[in-house]
Amino acid sequence: MTIHEVTLSSVAASLSRLYHEHQTLCERLGDIDVKATKAREDYSMAYQVEYIRLSDERENGKPLAVETRKARAFVATRDLRVKAEGYECSLRDVKQKIKSVEIGIDAARSAGSLVKAEIELAKAA
Image (cartoon, rainbow, N blue to C red; front, side, top):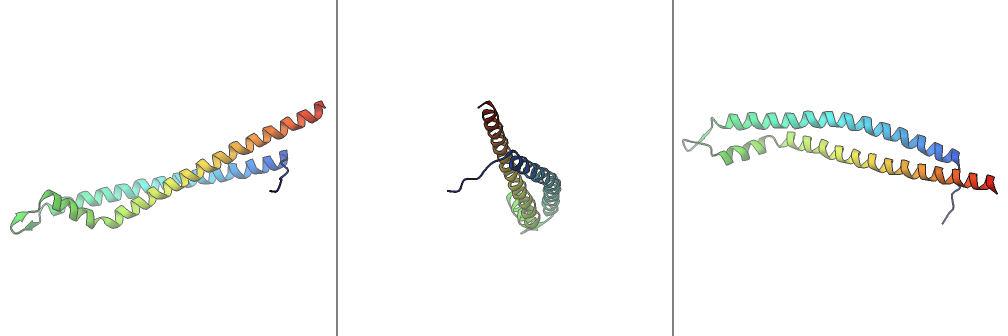
């Protein structure tokens, strides 16, 4: 096991890096959220349009059953649904990365407090 010397400078550098990473991830989260919202709306609208369109279709002279229209609309809008779900996955991924960076920030702050305490102890001795 190697021992790393922690200094106030190294803590400050770590906090700076983590802060910038956090800012970048938060901006990315906002961008993905907008895309996810638009993709969900595109899917929802396409599904509804397809479902309504299928209301006019007939099978053996009878209107399509509700469940048949739902299933066909579901299949017809697959690509849009998968795209929306992809954005949802990206949102969860970025949120998890943000939490990880926040844990790193907390750890760096704790390390900084420890270094400060050691400096104060050394001054007192």
